[in-house]
Image 1: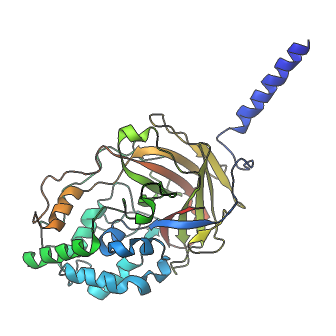
Image 2 (image 1 turned 60 degrees about the horizontal axis):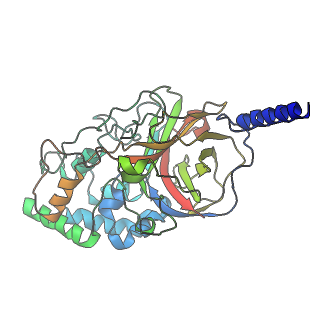
Image 3 (image 1 turned 30 degrees about the vertical axis):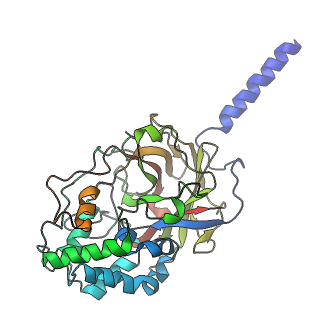
Length: 177
Length: 221
């Protein structure tokens, strides 16, 4: 009888453990350590901005500069990189100073209704979808000149999509290789 | 013109050192051997309307790029790290809302979107709002999805890197050994994985602005 009670107690306990580890949890228990202060290491919004426009000595600085202060800290560097690329204008009609002002504050602009895309031929900078060919968009705006037709061998990399199809349901990204 | 351009590109490589892609390996502070912040290197952030539900917004924060399949089975999200999606909905490029993700003991917990505490480069956990949990999906397993009663969904685990780019050729152009891209190009990220955190939230939790500004951060304690 005592043994039976112990088994009953054990099965009740294991039942409680299973319930406690359920995925759905609006009022979490305290199994997470939420104490302390976290300090920033990396930061990103638009693809390849830090990569292309920030030199090695300042990459960490860019990763810990808040977006609202990036213009003051990095405007001159971004302009000098565009100068190095021979930049004068792009298909959006932006001169060097205007394009720099767009690029240097590294945030992703996202529309809260309608199509969200980096660029789809019509919508510009309304989000970033995994399928967007962001590199071609950036190459075109940097190297394509005022009509988008300059330097044709530098304005697209001819990799036009991901190597795996995205899912139509959450979490949308393809399973790993 | 082309010559001038290539000269310009070479000048960039001279000053910028190794050029990488999207944001893969663009945080020297967190990629060195023995660094306490390994796993903090962001590869990409995505923000898009849910393909399954127009009333939802999806945020993807990918880290630990160029992972081989062999390395993907043992990769982990470090437990001293906060993954933070920053959202500005007033147009000043200062975050008003944050989505904070922690991974501890094989579990993901996502807070928010919740009003930011103190904006900037240091953060404490904003534990006051709704949170959603799920077990980290193991390599090779089908995705585990956590849900909350307000319709939030969360996921953490290895996924195929959705980024694509002929990085190899780009580096050759930068180095001056090639004058342009090839056709067809070769995706340098084909066959590689990343550690992904995916969060889908009701748009109603993002405020009423027609455009929000979004960026991703990794932070450690």
